[in-house]
Amino acid sequence: MLRLIAVLLAAVSFAAAQPKWSGNRLLDAVPFPSSIGLYKPGQGYPKDFDQRKAEEYFRRVNAKVAGLVKDTVRKWQLAGLQ
Image 1: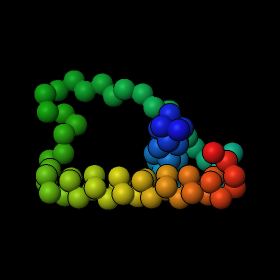
Image 2 (image 1 turned 180 degrees about the vertical axis):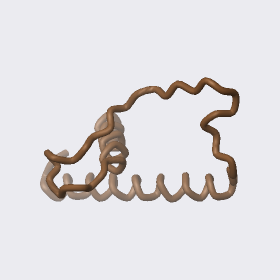
Image 3 (image 1 turned 45 degrees about the horizontal axis):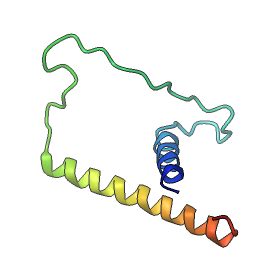
């Protein structure tokens, strides 16, 4: 069950990052995950990082994903899937 939840979390995270242009999942652009090469010291870091805002964002994203997972598992249980 934990592996299933981990896969679901990965799918939710990936799906949340997808652009919603066409309304047709087959036509939406899908970014391919890859590493990003940074060549200068400090390159890529936010210029106005706020620890409080980052923690709030982290908390809210985790709460949203947890809610989606719990709702999905609840629906699976209602459907008789264990």
